View 1 (spheres, rainbow, N blue to C red):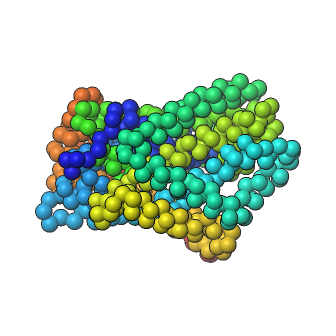
View 2: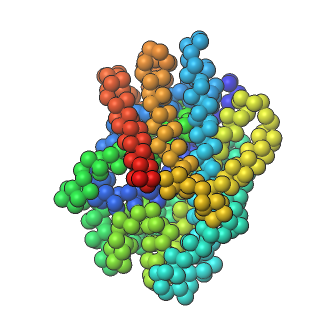
View 3: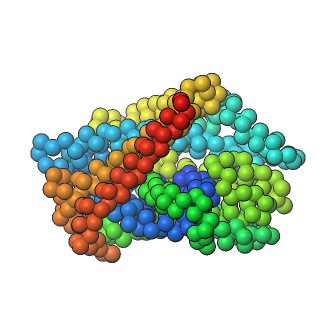
Length: 462
């Protein structure tokens, strides 16, 4: 596609791509998973697996996108050998992006809702933990309120994507990402200045293998492997699309490392916001998924200027989640344009209406459809399982095999595309690792996820 748009600058590409990776997984999941898995030891393993797994697979998605100049389905068709069917995976990628947004827009709506609640003073005068927890439970029980937050997220996301790549996605993502980074600094400084914050920093950043052994070192390693892999959302072409908008000026390896570095910076800094605040107020740092919506609001309401800090924190969370929403929406729009030939206006309207309707089951799964479960998992959990445990690792394995085997695009072509431009190069000597070791690591993630799912079903129904 010779007339395909490009990013205006390398910075624009980095911020948009990092914005897609940076989201709820960084600022919500990373801190609570780190807290539940020994803190500093988990972070150490996370860095290791991000380097040896996340960066290589990210370069492959981006290389496929840049070489083909198309979204997932067309990319495979352009690069696969005649008669091969790799492009079937492109359809699974598109379905995966829709599934991801069917629950991600709901959680993004929660962030928006909590920002509005703190900013409007909903938590003013609330003193008991039960009352603070009740705000979240009340929101989940109100389908109208949640539908409104979700619909605002969807409509705003497609509105941004209705402009050109440079004037819409790139320009807005720059504002969001720079605002997000600025808010991180303010929130981290505030947390570090709290009395007792040092204990939280120690738990978070100093590896304590004795503490981690209580969870199990292997369990910590697997958790870190999963988080390092899923934080980049690789496997469903959510990153591949941005490769198709890249210029050939910079090597993909160098750009991938920059994306991972920014993604990791936000994840680590999120922990520096949360853990010092937890220890300063005597709250356990391993409180799990409720950390953001129950534990932290309880801290804010007892903190001097809590209304302001709570508002800033949740606008930060809103920025982080919305950056992913608009990035994935861009992927969906591109896929529909290339495969169905829809005009941009028609494309935006159909996708926006479909996404609002398709997101309703997740919203209603907390109230009207709360009885619809599988092994104790509600609709959001089921959708997240399909994407995170099945489609992401399986898709990453497909991209890997496509790029390194003779049956796909081939290692030499991948390497040439990856190393085109100025910057850090990918070494040819890594080929044995890519062909024989990395697939095993991905299979460990996939197998562990499926095993845990089956084990939980057996336990629930036994």
